[in-house]
Image 1 (cartoon, rainbow over the protein chains, first blue to last red):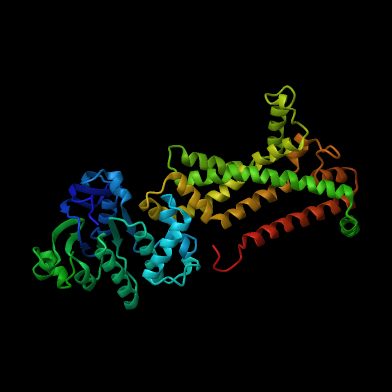
Image 2: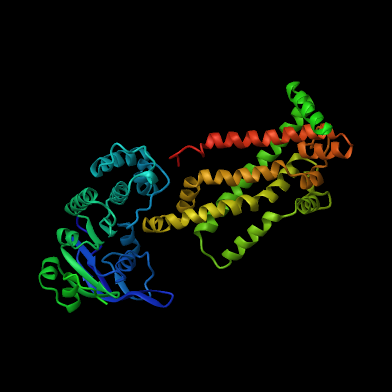
Length: 238
Length: 234
């Protein structure tokens, strides 16, 4: 899949709420392939950064420029939340929802939903009520629901937070497969092990500022900033 | 005590013998209240969904007014509808006064705010839960409303039942616009008022027991159909 959305350019992009800056101003350019992992201490603005890129949080100043018109770019992206939001429907109805709102026939949507349910390991749960699934199952469902419409870009806000090892392995496998299929991933995580396993490049945020934006190997071997080194050493960053 | 016992036995007798007049009055009560409920739900529920997902300048004021209108005095509603439908009124040409249609109109006006307010509370909570997801999927306003209405359908049954309860038990407005005409606009509540006025307490109680039984039966039927108490059902 060759993305028509990238490069994505942020110029002084800043998001604020009630006069308080949540993230920014940020200046950087993102290319169209691989996995970008956003890391940083608690309160660094990782979620706000993802929401700002996605358009879910209003831009207070600056610009975000996609390679294609913004409405078109927004149609080609998905978002998976830290706490997955389950529609009060069955697993099947949740997975087909994005297709149905785009006008795909129920038959075609159901066929594709069965494929995705099998891929994420929910094949035998299609008739169950989604809100009563376990946390790991809900996150898999959220991923299947986000990926079924073949987004060119998928944002993931700490998709493995509060999940155990088995569920984390399953979800990383889904993400690796999505990446291999050409889906551009931009995700935040607290888990440095996961960041090392998945990242092609890293954005290091502190107090809403992107202190570093570098290839993953470079960042993890020799971070360019003192805060980056301290963060990787496990020191507390004030 | 004798009146209550007499009412009970008379109620049982009327039901067991399928008293023709009781059947006619009961069916008319159901016809008027169910019609009003359907029309009111078609207005109130989309309105509640709209108020949940759409932000506009006077939104809070509209919600406050809607909540206040839950306490609308039925007699006043009846009076207003009477004036509108009376021969010299703006809608007099329709000739609806003292007809079941006029009673339905009055009941719709009374229960729309009630259904809309209760539905809005459920839909607002669901919207808070769904907001980020639906925004992230670029869902249109119409699709958001449809999604909320479908996913909250069991909670909306409660709103509808509250509306039905108010409608079937209402007497003031339908007495004014319906006129309690025998074989035309007489329903259970107006018949009870009439029998009480005549001092026929046993018959009035009998009609009251039938009214309560009818309301409970309809509620149970809707709960059963909606499977609201079934675990894990959405």
